[in-house]
Image (cartoon, rainbow, N blue to C red; front, side, top):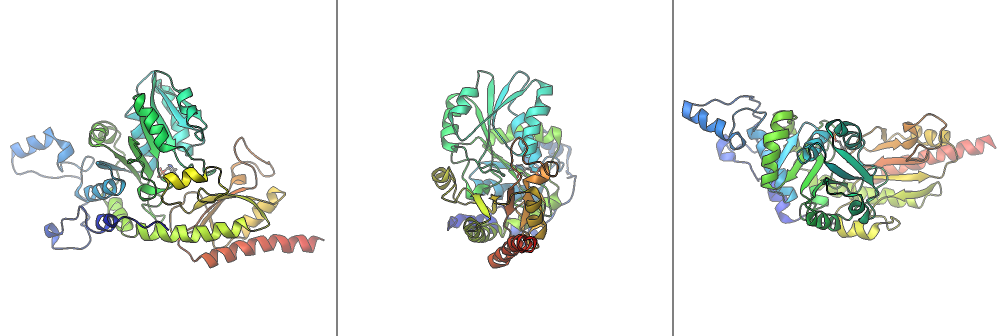
Length: 399
Ligand SMILES: *Cc1c(COP(=O)(O)O)cnc(C)c1O
């Protein structure tokens, strides 16, 4: 089990909190104010001159949000952070800040669905095109790149089939070519995978997952060097305006207090559940980067310090109906998208296509994604066992 560095405790409990300014309060203040006032014309003039560094209006800076930004940047080992109203907003800002008409992007195949939509459907309207490649082979990024390529988009692992990209190898090759790397690190969090230290230029997250951690907010994080954050602050941040509200920034500060605790617990439980499934006769295969049956197990162990609660399994059930029955029988697992909260989830791939169809262009009918939350392992395993047994009981009664 990975043990976080000591400074993680300092960051989540103290960094950025100037308690002497607010009565020694242990919890940071929630400053909802949209607007900030000045005593003299000259103070106001100076504020206009450097909005990046002052509190003028909350679409720029806000004191509550700023505490959160400092903690998130420190957790990632990045100079600075911006927090957005969704992960998708952070991803769009990271990518759009580095392309113009005529530019080209290379992206890993099967990224998060709305990353794919942005690159495949939206950006071509502005003359920006994307090639999607199998990222398990680093060479594919190089081969797909041209002199117009400005951004390499990574997502390692992706969140349904868990394919990895070799992050250090790709950032080294990108730097030689003056290409900016953007990595979606939602699966591992900054604690679980050190993207910035591995040379990634812009690390992005859906904070709706582990950083929020309680399925009660939608939020995004962008982490980068000082100059890059300044550039994005002055363009996509201020212009598109997809900021996180101070209320949600405050909620995320609260969630960060328990982030390491939640991550440790989730990994422990997930390993137990994965072991149960791998040994179950009705499971053909489990896709989990820290399982030694994962085709990129060595790379996973090399570049990931922590493996999350999200994995998928191919069930040995002959029909879509049986897969549906198995999922319908689960009680401890809620049937839903997303992940990263306290509650365990199940998401069957067969829900993406019409009933009875055996696959779509990417997933077979018997692939089921699971997310492991904060419940006891025995409670979850008992529920899975029960759902498998229901199927067995039915088979017997049919004989
Ligand atoms: C959920 C998710 C996103 C999108 O984040 P939102 O906060 O829902 O906008 C992006 N990438 C990955 C890997 C995700 O799981």
